Amino acid sequence: MSKLKTLVIEGAGQIAPAKVDDYLAIGGYNGLKKATGMKPEDIIGEVKKSGLLGRGGAAYPAGKKWDHLLHIPEFPKYIVCNADEGEPGTFKDRLLMAKLPLRVIEGMTIAGYVFGAKAGYIYVRGEYRKIQRVLQEAILHARGAGFLGKNILGRGFDFDIYIISGAGAYVCGENSALLNSTEGKVGRPRIKPPHLAEVGLFLKPTLVNNVESFASIPTIVENGGEKYFSYGSPDSGGVKLVCLSGHVKRRGVFEVPFGPTLRDIIFDPELGAGIPDGKRLKFFHLGGQSGPIGGPGQLDTPYDYKALTKAGLSVGSGAVVVMNEDVSILEYLKGVTEFFLHESCGKCVPCREGNKQIYKILCRLAVPGQSQPGDLGILRRLVDTMISASFCGLGQSAAVALNTAWRHFKEEFEANAVEGQAGAEAA
Ligand SMILES: Cc1cc2nc3c(=O)[nH]c(=O)nc-3n(C[C@H](O)[C@H](O)[C@H](O)COP(=O)(O)O)c2cc1C
Ligand code: SF4
Image (cartoon, rainbow, N blue to C red; front, side, top):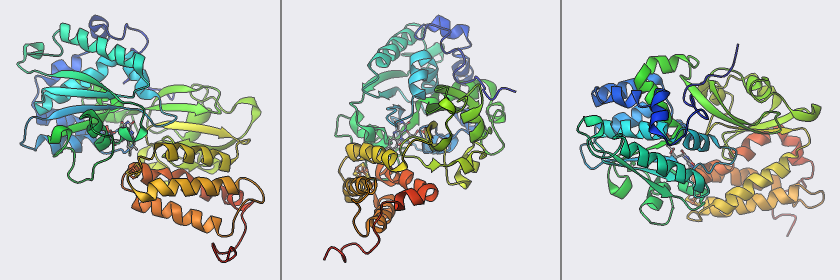
């Protein structure tokens, strides 16, 4: 039986992306048409039943977030789509926006209807220039066909969408930094609470959801939350776009129901199809650079939120980066840390200095004879400090790969390490 399930990406590549007529021909806008005949709380009821967890990485229940915003009496409210997609190894939102922009727009328009919002913003990764043009074209066509703008579908509600371009900073994917950047301020994270549902864009109540989350809304509304849930496993309803890359024979975006094992995802002929050149798998990295690293002993873990969490892993953004036996874990982690070192916004010490020190120690550990006494102990302390004391999710997750890799490859960390207390030997 196929491990794939085409639902949210249904029609991708089969239609002219920005053409409303093409989108209508594949059942587009059925969700919005149905939604406008429903009460907002009933729509949220369906989102709750679907079990949809935010697909941007944090896995916050979408229904709960929507419910919270619905009960905030202040207006105007804003709808914001997080299309920053800066997480390395993650390229699923790109596919949705390039091939099915109107599905993302439809999901946002349903949210606009639910919350009585007049404006929505799609904050798109700066590097996705061509995609920004596709989205803009789709917005123009949707407006022309009466699916955006004034009196949508003749149902008396107004909603429009505007594109905001990011400028290449990973931290701007963090939802509060994203709102600051959208407002034209420096893209640095805000302190929370207050929640963005209360004090969001322009200090007004705001919904921020990921591209894939919004693109899942039309099918949830059209066919019901229970139906959507039923595609997945009892612990994780629905489907997920998985981005496979690295040492697998088949790389790309695959839509799967929750439930197959990691072994299925990496080795099934319809999915990753295994490791090329007869090599063995050494490790896999889930959810992007900010996610955990797993080893071959965890391959039989089902790909669902609960089972992965129980195994110390996570779905995150949906990235699955696979590495073969030739890869040095220390060299790999140097690359991960270099990324965070580059992307740290510098606002808080644990992240700004922690990444720097971790990088230096990893460089020493990777070369025989370079390690200093106490390197391993300091590395462990830096990891704990960054996870517990960083101001935002970037710093809190920057050392997760290192922390989890330690469990599987302790001997590689120790191979070149010099024993002893930091400072004592140096004195
Ligand atoms: C450093 C950092 C970068 C992030 N980048 C993204 C991103 O590119 N896209 C995204 O959807 N969420 C990203 N997130 C998560 C968002 O803060 C937020 O959880 C998400 O937009 C909420 O939407 P969802 O509930 O639909 O997932 C990032 C978080 C952090 C801490
Ligand atoms: S953890 Fe601190 S330094 Fe790092 S990105 Fe967040 S706010 Fe900036």
